[in-house]
Image (cartoon, rainbow, N blue to C red; front, side, top):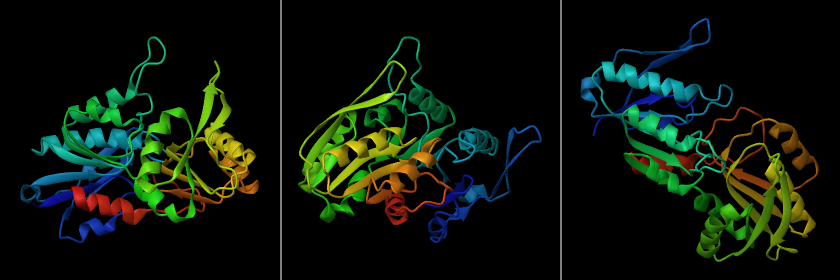
Length: 299
C-alpha cells in the first residue's frame, strides 16, 4: 500500500528512516497568526496516489503543550476538504489520559473527550504507547494498536536487577506481569494523597535490602512521587536503583527535583523512551530503535 506521511512539528527529525521505503512525505507549514492562533497550510501533493495518510507525532509539545492537538484537528479539516476522509494517527504519547475515571462529583473523564475528538476528526486507526490505563483503549471507537514499551525497556537492564518495584498500588498489576516475565522479585510502595493532593509515602512491601532494584512507571512528570519513592528505596538499603519509564513529561518543578535526585545520588541509571521530545539537556538513554521497530511492524 502506498502511504503518505505527515509529521507534526519536530517529529521528522526523529524518524527520518520512515521515509526510506519510498513513501511520500506531505509537506505542511505550521505557524501562528500574530495573535497566537495556530495555522496549518498543506503544500500541494499528488494525494490521489496515496492509499493511506499517516500522521506522526505526539499530541503534546514540550514547550507549547496542547499545540499538536490543535494542529491535528486543523490538519483533518484541510485533508477532508482535499477529499481525504480518514487517516492513521501514530501518536506515541496521548495527552489528557491521566483522568480516566471520576474521583469526585462533577469531574470530566478527559481521556474520553480526547478519544471522541480523534474519532470526530476521522482517525480510523490509532497507534499509541502506554496509555495511563490500558482499559482506556476501549474508549476509542476505531482500530487502536496499543503498544507496551515497558517490557522492552526492562529487558535492556534485566541482567542488572533483582527486584522490580511498583511506585504505587495502581501500578502493581503491571509490575507483577513484568516480574513474572523476567523471573524477578517484586515490591510495592504504598502512598497516600492528603486533601491538598500532597503525596505521603507510607510503606514499602517487599525485600530490597542490598539488592539492585528497578522502579518502573508509565510516566514521570514533576518528579514529586519519584523523589519520595527513591528516598524510601534508599532508606530500605537498596544497593543500586534504576528508573524505568516510557513517557518523560518533565513538568515544573521537575528540573530542580531532577537535579536534587542527581546531586544526592538517589539513583544509578535513568532509562526512558523518546515518546515526547524533551529539549532539556539531560543524560538519558533514548530508545529510538525500540520505538521505530514497533512502528515498522504496525504501519
